[in-house]
Length: 238
Image (tube, rainbow, N blue to C red):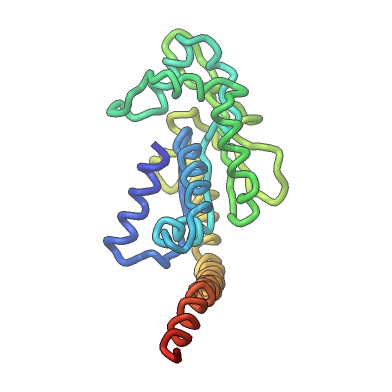
């Protein structure tokens, strides 16, 4: 799923000739996990796959709405996990895939692995963590789908704020007066204003590094071919 997501971003960039535009991701729930995985994949690409790497290079900020970075405490039993999955995954997706259900659980190894991949990259991005203040009606009971301790990891230098809504509604602002709307818009404006200069600097650095790698590879090729050239001249002289 993460690979397809990264490809989709890459494909849109390619179509619109926008591989050098700043990117700000706005993610809700498990969408944030997909973004983290996609950025980890993108960061490992070399200049030989520079279009896919450009997602990592050009990402300036990420806003996480209720992303379960360490899973959900209420996703322990299989039945509960399936209900939670049906709330936060599009109906067109495979809702009850076993790996998805396992990933929802608190302390999930899948989530921990993605966190381990993403953690070294975090200082590169502006990050905003948002969490739900209201319980979600599950029909049979009400629960916090993603508790604050999972939605907001203990990390310095990040923005964080509560949204007075449940998990479903926390990213669905009805109007400009909706709680949390102004906070999110203000963050997007800050990020949008600062992003162009930062991304321009990254792209310049990447271009310089790319040129250095290409020169190094050219020198290596010439060095490897030198004995052949010398032999050819020697044979010619004899």
